[in-house]
Image (cartoon, rainbow, N blue to C red; front, side, top):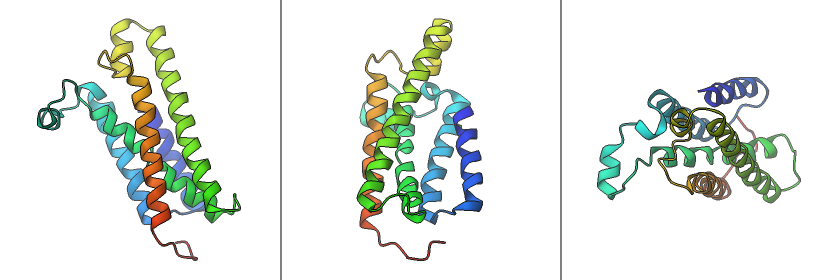
Length: 165
Protein backbone atom coordinates (compact mmCIF):
# COMPACT_ATOMS: atom_id res chain seq x y z
CA UNK A 1 0.00 0.00 0.00
CA UNK A 2 2.99 2.30 0.56
CA UNK A 3 3.70 2.63 -3.22
CA UNK A 4 0.07 3.64 -3.85
CA UNK A 5 0.17 6.29 -1.11
CA UNK A 6 3.45 7.65 -2.51
CA UNK A 7 2.01 7.82 -6.03
CA UNK A 8 -1.15 9.59 -4.84
CA UNK A 9 0.95 12.09 -2.86
CA UNK A 10 3.06 12.79 -5.95
CA UNK A 11 -0.04 13.27 -8.11
CA UNK A 12 -1.54 15.71 -5.58
CA UNK A 13 1.77 17.58 -5.37
CA UNK A 14 2.01 17.87 -9.16
CA UNK A 15 -1.67 18.81 -9.52
CA UNK A 16 -0.93 22.37 -8.42
CA UNK A 17 2.25 22.77 -10.43
CA UNK A 18 1.49 20.91 -13.64
CA UNK A 19 -1.99 19.49 -14.14
CA UNK A 20 -2.17 16.51 -16.48
CA UNK A 21 -4.70 15.69 -19.17
CA UNK A 22 -7.85 13.74 -18.36
CA UNK A 23 -6.43 10.65 -20.07
CA UNK A 24 -3.34 10.78 -17.85
CA UNK A 25 -5.52 10.90 -14.76
CA UNK A 26 -7.60 7.99 -16.03
CA UNK A 27 -4.44 5.95 -16.62
CA UNK A 28 -3.08 6.89 -13.19
CA UNK A 29 -6.42 6.02 -11.59
CA UNK A 30 -6.34 2.52 -13.08
CA UNK A 31 -2.98 1.90 -11.43
CA UNK A 32 -4.22 3.21 -8.07
CA UNK A 33 -7.40 1.11 -8.24
CA UNK A 34 -5.65 -2.14 -9.20
CA UNK A 35 -2.90 -1.74 -6.62
CA UNK A 36 -5.38 -0.87 -3.87
CA UNK A 37 -7.35 -4.03 -4.64
CA UNK A 38 -4.11 -6.03 -4.74
CA UNK A 39 -2.98 -4.60 -1.42
CA UNK A 40 -6.31 -5.45 0.16
CA UNK A 41 -6.30 -9.14 -0.83
CA UNK A 42 -2.59 -9.64 -1.64
CA UNK A 43 -2.08 -9.96 -5.36
CA UNK A 44 -2.13 -13.74 -5.57
CA UNK A 45 -5.42 -13.96 -3.64
CA UNK A 46 -7.49 -11.36 -5.50
CA UNK A 47 -10.74 -13.06 -6.57
CA UNK A 48 -9.89 -13.31 -10.26
CA UNK A 49 -11.16 -16.84 -10.89
CA UNK A 50 -13.38 -16.04 -13.86
CA UNK A 51 -10.48 -14.52 -15.76
CA UNK A 52 -8.17 -17.37 -14.77
CA UNK A 53 -10.73 -20.03 -15.74
CA UNK A 54 -11.71 -18.28 -18.98
CA UNK A 55 -8.14 -18.34 -20.28
CA UNK A 56 -7.27 -21.67 -18.67
CA UNK A 57 -4.43 -20.27 -16.57
CA UNK A 58 -2.99 -22.25 -13.67
CA UNK A 59 -2.20 -19.18 -11.61
CA UNK A 60 -3.91 -15.91 -10.74
CA UNK A 61 -2.66 -13.26 -13.16
CA UNK A 62 -4.11 -10.25 -11.36
CA UNK A 63 -0.57 -9.19 -10.41
CA UNK A 64 0.46 -9.22 -14.07
CA UNK A 65 -2.52 -7.01 -15.00
CA UNK A 66 -1.56 -4.66 -12.17
CA UNK A 67 2.01 -4.56 -13.48
CA UNK A 68 0.75 -3.54 -16.89
CA UNK A 69 -0.87 -0.54 -15.22
CA UNK A 70 2.54 0.71 -14.05
CA UNK A 71 3.36 1.29 -17.71
CA UNK A 72 0.45 3.74 -17.99
CA UNK A 73 2.64 6.28 -16.20
CA UNK A 74 4.80 6.58 -19.31
CA UNK A 75 1.97 8.65 -20.80
CA UNK A 76 2.06 11.10 -17.87
CA UNK A 77 5.87 11.26 -17.91
CA UNK A 78 5.90 12.17 -21.61
CA UNK A 79 3.21 14.75 -20.99
CA UNK A 80 5.14 16.21 -18.06
CA UNK A 81 8.41 16.38 -20.02
CA UNK A 82 6.77 18.05 -23.01
CA UNK A 83 4.64 20.45 -20.95
CA UNK A 84 7.63 21.68 -18.97
CA UNK A 85 10.06 21.70 -21.93
CA UNK A 86 12.39 19.26 -20.19
CA UNK A 87 13.41 17.71 -23.49
CA UNK A 88 13.86 19.13 -26.95
CA UNK A 89 11.76 16.54 -28.72
CA UNK A 90 8.89 14.18 -28.08
CA UNK A 91 11.13 11.29 -29.11
CA UNK A 92 13.45 12.02 -26.23
CA UNK A 93 10.46 12.34 -23.87
CA UNK A 94 9.24 8.92 -25.02
CA UNK A 95 12.67 7.40 -24.41
CA UNK A 96 12.88 9.00 -20.96
CA UNK A 97 9.39 7.73 -20.05
CA UNK A 98 10.02 4.16 -21.16
CA UNK A 99 13.46 4.08 -19.50
CA UNK A 100 11.95 5.49 -16.28
CA UNK A 101 9.26 2.80 -16.18
CA UNK A 102 11.81 0.04 -16.77
CA UNK A 103 14.06 1.51 -14.05
CA UNK A 104 11.21 1.80 -11.54
CA UNK A 105 10.15 -1.78 -12.34
CA UNK A 106 13.69 -3.04 -11.80
CA UNK A 107 14.10 -1.16 -8.51
CA UNK A 108 10.74 -2.40 -7.24
CA UNK A 109 11.58 -6.02 -8.07
CA UNK A 110 14.87 -5.65 -6.17
CA UNK A 111 12.97 -4.26 -3.18
CA UNK A 112 10.51 -7.19 -3.36
CA UNK A 113 13.40 -9.64 -3.47
CA UNK A 114 15.17 -8.01 -0.51
CA UNK A 115 11.93 -8.11 1.50
CA UNK A 116 11.34 -11.74 0.58
CA UNK A 117 14.79 -12.90 1.68
CA UNK A 118 14.76 -10.85 4.90
CA UNK A 119 11.42 -12.22 6.18
CA UNK A 120 9.99 -15.62 6.84
CA UNK A 121 9.35 -17.63 3.64
CA UNK A 122 5.55 -17.41 3.82
CA UNK A 123 5.46 -13.61 4.24
CA UNK A 124 8.09 -13.18 1.55
CA UNK A 125 6.20 -15.37 -0.90
CA UNK A 126 2.92 -13.59 -0.19
CA UNK A 127 4.59 -10.20 -0.69
CA UNK A 128 6.18 -11.29 -3.95
CA UNK A 129 2.98 -12.78 -5.30
CA UNK A 130 5.18 -14.93 -7.52
CA UNK A 131 3.08 -18.04 -6.96
CA UNK A 132 6.26 -20.13 -7.30
CA UNK A 133 7.08 -18.81 -10.79
CA UNK A 134 10.88 -18.48 -10.86
CA UNK A 135 10.67 -15.96 -13.73
CA UNK A 136 7.99 -13.80 -12.07
CA UNK A 137 10.27 -10.77 -11.57
CA UNK A 138 11.34 -10.77 -15.23
CA UNK A 139 7.74 -11.18 -16.41
CA UNK A 140 6.61 -8.35 -14.13
CA UNK A 141 9.29 -6.01 -15.47
CA UNK A 142 8.39 -7.00 -19.02
CA UNK A 143 4.70 -6.27 -18.33
CA UNK A 144 5.61 -2.82 -16.96
CA UNK A 145 7.80 -2.06 -19.95
CA UNK A 146 5.45 -3.38 -22.63
CA UNK A 147 2.64 -1.23 -21.36
CA UNK A 148 5.00 1.76 -21.13
CA UNK A 149 5.74 1.26 -24.82
CA UNK A 150 2.02 0.85 -25.57
CA UNK A 151 1.00 3.99 -23.68
CA UNK A 152 3.81 5.90 -25.39
CA UNK A 153 2.39 4.84 -28.74
CA UNK A 154 -1.03 6.06 -27.59
CA UNK A 155 0.58 9.41 -26.73
CA UNK A 156 2.20 9.64 -30.14
CA UNK A 157 -1.04 8.77 -31.97
CA UNK A 158 -3.36 11.17 -30.14
CA UNK A 159 -3.44 14.85 -31.09
CA UNK A 160 -2.35 17.23 -28.34
CA UNK A 161 -3.42 20.80 -27.66
CA UNK A 162 -0.94 23.63 -27.33
CA UNK A 163 -2.75 24.90 -24.25
CA UNK A 164 -2.54 22.18 -21.66
CA UNK A 165 -5.38 22.05 -19.18
